[in-house]
Length: 285
Image (cartoon, rainbow, N blue to C red; front, side, top):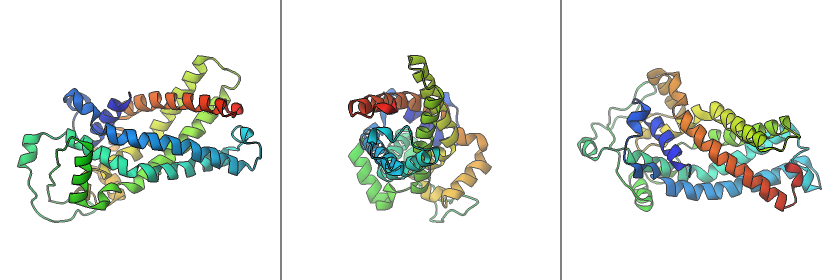
């Protein structure tokens, strides 16, 4: 349901130049490139996120009454629970994020141009400039052929590229999402109408995207098929984006990510609250 926004967001982040309209014009089928990898990741990540967060809330509260641990958890402990949850889920999703990014990058390739791209030298990138090597981008459409190609061309490291920014982004995602959600929920405490739920969801999504989008851009760039010849390390990637493309690049794709986070976040927390009620954690609502 929300994946086309993910595709458009990632496509914008992968393009150093180009307007939104130049990037969103490819065939419609491209909007679901990498969806299979992300679906597997999303299913496991969501289960891991809420189970881990629940367990951590209970442990940090030192409260025997499990139904009471969420509302009475202090802000500091709530942040710790969110941070540890983010680390756990980031380790799970890194390989899937790499596969998704490779598939989206592949879907963006013009096949005729791809055939003309040839490596020039084997020079490594320095901190201030890229390598002189022009690394071709493979055009592969399906999940398992993509996994096979990644392993054959880049080895096991292809599945852990961008681990550092992914961990930072996921920790920030989870910490900010749960903290902002709880803060806005408590701010509107006493109101149980649909409007308050919508306001809480939108405010949480906006806060999340505004604060974590730069990390998301760096994460995407570090997971590309040619990242090793483009950037020396994560800091180099940040430096080069800032110097060569400008500060605004760090918020590329924000609108599409806000749409995706707003819809998926609203659905996730709605399900979360309903499941919590069914399990007897009624104080959370």
